[in-house]
Length: 450
Image 1 (cartoon, rainbow, N blue to C red):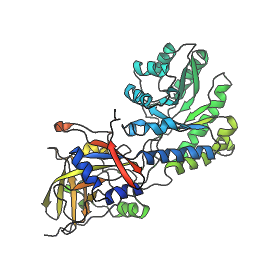
Image 2: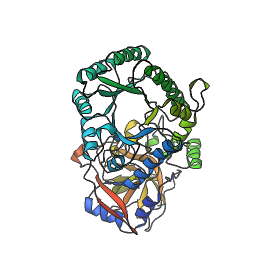
Image 3: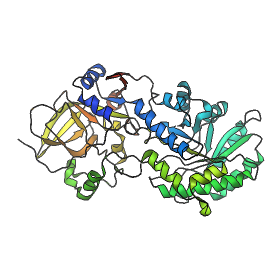
Image 4: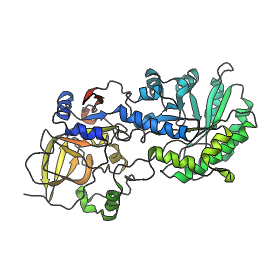
């Protein structure tokens, strides 16, 4: 019986290397046979290219700064050598294991920025030992930093600012706290080096980032008059990624209906799967934005005042740098659509566990074989009704069969491991690193995850 439930295809925008892997008649099948379960594919060359694009934007604008890879976006260590080997690059960490992992791959302590709220004493002590830059989030944390510092090795820090546009955030120093923190930095400048200010904004808009960065440049100038170094502004992350082309995303948002999803599932929000500008193009627009007080562009003001621009992209550096593969374990029919069950859990595509949905189409491999097109949702291997890897009824070229693979595109940024779990004592998906070797792609196990 042909299944004909109305639905819509959402093909992902993918890099050539991913298409090449799927086009190989054996490669994915050989990896699946070797690892015996779900797996993630990682492509460090794409990460390095993305990193180089961000660094080139800074250099082209005449702005001194550092691109810190937000390590929380993916646990693998295969990205870290690119950070260790590149100019204008470092790593953003928020835990002792993340910091140690970065050092293990050759990233110098001076090229690490430590973020996050209420850092442990062990983390602060290790950061001090390795001369890391620490974004101080609260007054009590500042006092702990001062207590750890020594005159022969001043503690390097930024003061994290609570944005006026997000006054209910639990992160950052409000205006009154910021004034107290600045006074303490002046009083203790023998022991600490206050290198500037940082912030992080939700969403992906350019204008709010420009406005707050411009304000903090002027705060840096004022802080220098009080004897502080104050030569840096960190604008955090939130650099956009587009997973789908514009027409496809607009058509989906205009036509979406509950019947496209298993059990009529509804969602309050989705990630904006098509955006503009994205990645390094977004950084270019931020730099071109207006400085405070009509002083020209932000990039010109940064250069004029000798202020460094720091940024902490995670997802944008991982754009196109990996995908996830789930083996098909079964297929059943439910009225006018099908349900695929895969080996693995929805926690390995973490958008689902935020009450949302990872929307780019999974791709059936191999796609050939007999059978009529079929729409189907995708469930995980657990006993939980809500363990759905894809609620949406995806149009497949035929019914998936036991032993097939479903390839989820572009999952390296936050999807792969943010919420992975060994529920049911299932092992976490294996990881393999692929690289170009002359005319072919080669793979190896990735043993570099923390």
